[in-house]
Length: 206
Image (cartoon, rainbow, N blue to C red; front, side, top):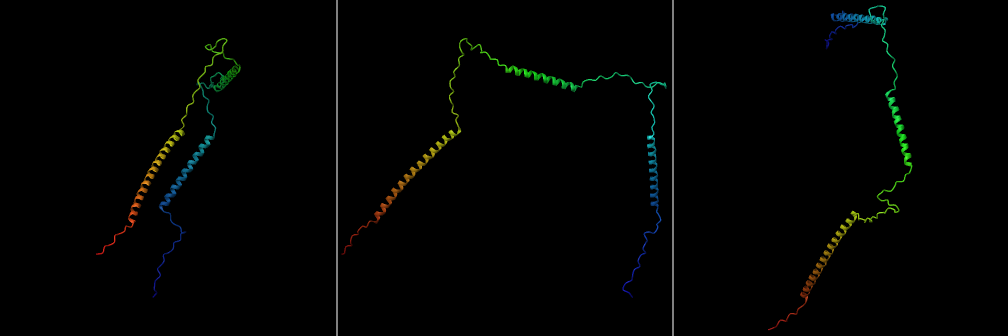
């Protein structure tokens, strides 16, 4: 007996074989047909409206009375008179003012160029004598008091204190040096006294 048995394979279905449409497919086709018909009706309606709009139709004239032979007559109005614009009036006025101002300035300049000597005041004028000139005392100079001068004075005082301190320290150092020398000399003298040989007496025999 064989080791295995081949299983029976299922039959293959041809995809190109005709199929029977179902209920859902039929409904879908019906809805498609209805939508197509409604679209055609709407397009036909729009086409007719467009054709009607293109056909020219004369509008009747307005009538003021019920009589058929009397047409509307517009009211007669007087012609409008042209006026100068306000902006143009302003520009003309400003130009005139500018010319007047320039003319006045030129006249003032001409008047300034004509030299006219001014007279002496009545309080100082005496006929036959020139006015006295008042003499003023010379102004005494005032020291501005620079900061550098005050700083120099402070520095000089500080240097004097430093010199006094150094001199005092030098005197104290000299005094201590003298005291040290005196003590050293005393110690040397005392040590020399201990070094002097003193003869001892001979012992006596019995």
